[in-house]
Image (spheres, rainbow, N blue to C red):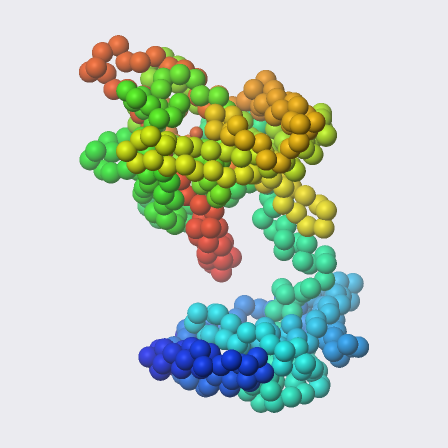
Amino acid sequence: MAMAHTCRSINFQRQVGRLSSSLMRMNQKPTLTASLLRCSASLRASLSTTTVPVTNPPDPNYRIASSKINSDRMVEVDLIPAKEMDNNWNRVRLHFPSVYLLDNCSTNFHPSTLQRLSPISQAKLDVGASAVTDDGQSLKINWDSKDVSLPDNISKFTADWLFDHSLEKVHRKKRQYHQLDQIQGLTAADFHHHVDNDPIDFSKLMADDDAELLRLWQLVWRRGLAFVINVPTNVEELGTQVTKMAEKTSYLRNTIYGEVFNVTTKPDPNNLAFTNGSLPLHTDLAYYKSPPDVQLLHCISQAGIGGESRFVDGVAAAHKLKQLHPESYDLLTKTKVRYTDKAMHSDDPFDIQAEHTVIHEEGFDGDKVVTQIFLSEASRCHEINSLGPNEVEDFYRAIVRLREIAENDPELIIEHRVEPGGMFVFNNNRMMHGRNAFEMPASSSSAPRFFHGMYIDWDGIWSRMRVLERDQSIHS
Ligand SMILES: [Fe+2]
């Protein structure tokens, strides 16, 4: 069942304008805090009639067994699972500083933009909870000062909200790792099994099959590389299919090479990719501060002989380096390497430079996961800014060892000759990729090897994935 109220967005905009004007006139911090609270209270009043669709909440997962105010204005809550008979075995005790609950009270958020209305302030830091009660379903807090500007000086939180926002280390770590713990190294056997048994079907994606779209991006995030079949090749008639794929997900990432780039031979190539020679394993555009996250490569025509695509998962290679040469692994996680791409004498000169560690880890409290690899020998800069004379040789040795694993380990080397209508979708900041040399067409009437390429960033993909995952959980 949905309910709706009258929208008063114009009034809201006026209130925002008044708030901005008030801020510009204010000079003293105490005045700013008090005025902010008054303005936000005024905003809340105006928002009480904003249009907000409301849906029935799902059944709760937790119930509140007990609640109290602990020392130092800490709210202590015991939660038990709502549906288990013997739920005391799974009782969890959570602790929330009063200011955290005040800062995150639902009435402090715009009902449709979900943005916080009034910022954290000294007044909020000074306020404590005067009473805490619960009815098993939700926690009610009475604040000890009217300065908090909440309706009736009360905040309410459901048991599920409290669990989902737990500050206990075990829960914070779980949330932090929600994405990271899905990352797995990719072997050649894994990839060929995927190609032979369950490739992504482009026609399903274009038919708005959300389950297939989610499967694609989960695969790329978890394993680094997915293979797509049934991609039309008559692009002159139907348009660029990489664009359609990107737009089906989020938005395109532009770079110095344009939104859609053609990978084919060129008379005066400005990149090794545009020759018919072999391409050593690399990740693209490491010279950007934020290199593009995901690359799409759509095969429109293939060479007669040669041109096989090559991939090695940098995450899996880094894991092997750590086992074999932990000191080299350690060096590559700490040493910033400068990459560059420049064309100083062209009609449109550019000079792009950025620094990254070759192996990038993310984690929580010392538990680290390899998430990204930035490696491009062709664009590694001659400048070394993070190593002294006695450290450079060890750094070179570490690069050599990583490359030896990538180029020689049969378990990791993926070689696949894609035929027209196939598309690789891969994590560019993880999958080292290259290709074998290929023969040029025997005559000018023969189609040259030709791929369309495009980049997308994780921000848009993750947004889409979260929406799809939420929709799936609602409908399952
Ligand atoms: Fe590349």
